[in-house]
Each structure stands twice: as structure tokens, then as C-alpha cells.
Image 1 (cartoon, rainbow, N blue to C red):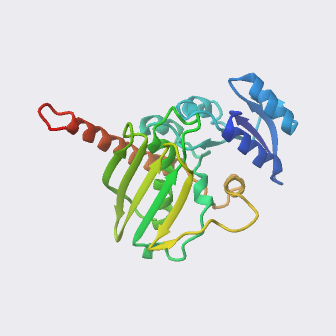
Image 2 (cartoon, rainbow, N blue to C red):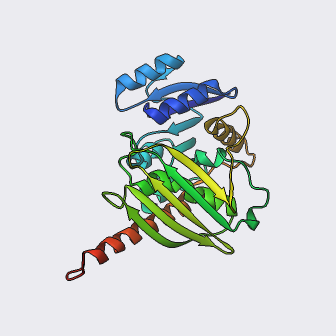
Image 3 (cartoon, rainbow, N blue to C red):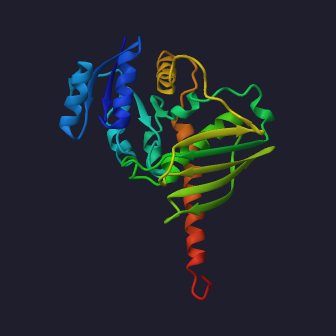
Length: 270
């Protein structure tokens, strides 16, 4: 039995707690939060302890800006850090540890592609209206990071950025990003503006379905984490995955900054 502790009792922490408590191979032993009342309430639901203690696996479900500090305290064991690994590549490098795993759970949500290397065109749309969490990072690190990771996983090749467009009141509200690889290209759209939530992936003109079966993505991810802890191969994201994807996120940010700077040049028509 793998004993699990969770740092963060917000929306994602509650989802992880439910997943760990229901999984046959794990036991939730404690939860912690900077707001003690939230940790106490979540612990009462699952009958576990409050406050950090011993655990085989620690799940970090706190704001991204705290990931390095929180996860860094638990590097003696296994740590699953919610995405993004950190707000920047420089910070994320501090978590490049063989027992750190990254919570890119969307890679467990979609059906597999039989021949990834034959993929030529991918279109991904993701709309998730801002609901008061994840605001310490921009839409690129909050939403687009999922889809950059997915495309990397689907095609299995290095990606190159081809273009970035920002929409809305600020360029961080919604993005359209082009990427390419040897033999193909993708258009990725991510938005936190008000409106209906949406997630869709179209591969070579055919919509990709959600993965069938009774397990949800977090349960599949937890199973993959346990397999990795047991020394077996699994699809769970590693710090290397997180760092490569964050490097693409930073290139998106840099492109947005250049775009804003060019619009603000003196004498340029508005």
C-alpha cells in the first residue's frame, strides 16, 4: 500500500484526494493547506490526518508559483507536481529530480493514435473560463501547456513555434499558437475568457475521442504514477517533459512581448 499526502486542499487537491482515496493501491494519510480550515474539511471527508507527515508519495496541488518551494521539501520521496511544473524553466530546473513526476493528466484523457508518426495536421481548441484558480500564471502556462504536451506526446518529435496571436482585453486572455514538426503542423487555441468550456482535438480531419473505460484521467494518471514508483514503464510525465513544454511556453510569451512592443513603437499607426 502506497501512503499518499496531498499539499493543497483547493479544487485540484480535492480531486486528487478523491482519486487517491478510491484507488485500490493507495491510502490517503494526510492533507495540508495554507488555510487550515480547508485541510481540516477535506481530511474529515476522507478520514485522514491534517498537516504534513510521512508519505511514500506527495501530491503538490498548490498554485504554480509555490511548486518549487513546496515540492522541494519532499524530494526525499516521490512527488507528483500539478502542471505546470513551475512558472518558468529556470524555476522548474530545481525540480529536475528522478522521483518528481508532472501532472499532465490530459495525456490520459484522449484515445491513442495507432500511428503517431503519420500525423500531419492537429487542431486543438481549449476554452476554460477563469474560475478564480490558476491566476498566478498566464493562459499559456495554465491551459496551452496541456496541449503542447499532448502534441509532443502524439507526434513524438521536437516542436517548433511558427506563430502566436493574442486575443481579448490582454494577449494572455486567449491565444492562437502555431507549431510544426518534421512532417506536420498544429494550430492550438486556448482561452480563459467567459463562455462555454470546450476541449476538442482534430487529427488529420478526424475528431479524436475521449478514452473509453470506467477510469477517469486522474485515476489513469495515478495508476501510471504507481507503475513508475514500482519501476515499471509508464506514460506519466517526467521533469524532462515538463521542462521541454515550459520552454515552448516561454517562447510563446516572448513572441507576445515582441508583438506588443511592435504595436507600441512611436509613430506606428494604431
